[in-house]
Amino acid sequence: MARGARRAKSPFRAALAPLYALDISWRPGRTGMGTLVDIDRREKLLDEGLDLDGLELCAVASGLFQEGDPHGYEEVLEAIGMMQHCPTSSALYVAIWKLLSLSGWVGDFGHCWHCGEAVDEAMAMNWHAYQLACHACGKGMVISAGMRKGITAQFIDSDVGSNVRLSKNDLLCWQRMIQDVLKQHGLKAPSIINEELS
Image 1 (tube, rainbow, N blue to C red):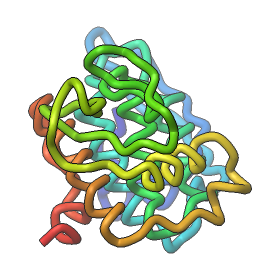
Image 2 (tube, one colour):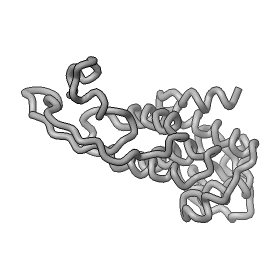
Image 3 (cartoon, rainbow, N blue to C red):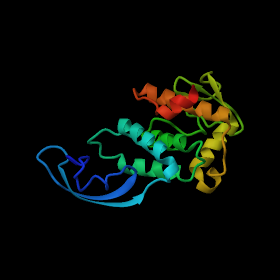
Image 4 (tube, rainbow, N blue to C red):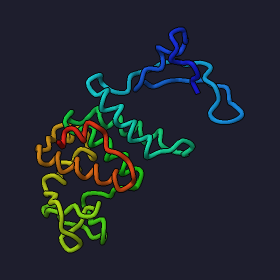
């Protein structure tokens, strides 16, 4: 769409910095998206310290939403917006989980994804075969009640969520869950998540 935009003399080069909102105009082509005609860079979508996480999120989104899909932009914008209100340690996980949820790949933390039964919020659950399961449906990695509450708080209320800090063990469990879901669908987890697990 932006042919030659990275060339040194391109009038679009400076405006096409990643993670900014853009107003664009283009000329439709016979095939594909067409050609970029004009661009106006607006506000930055993330604080500078979250740039790398934002790019990782976009990489995951490119696997979830293929070119030509009628959706994806609003979902990515919503996930990026959530990153601003989360503790830095969990911002990427919250955003990826939001995308996975909006894509229908994961369920909520209050029900067994296998049988659909509600699970008491004080009970632990299990991560089994890429699903959050009640004790009757599967054994696996234990997902504590505190972890479920902590993750859920970050999605329900940004004021509460911004004050919730997950333990290192809970973050490791959540990383594993994200890796498993993405792997199940043939996608690679972001390098930041892979590095932190090792």
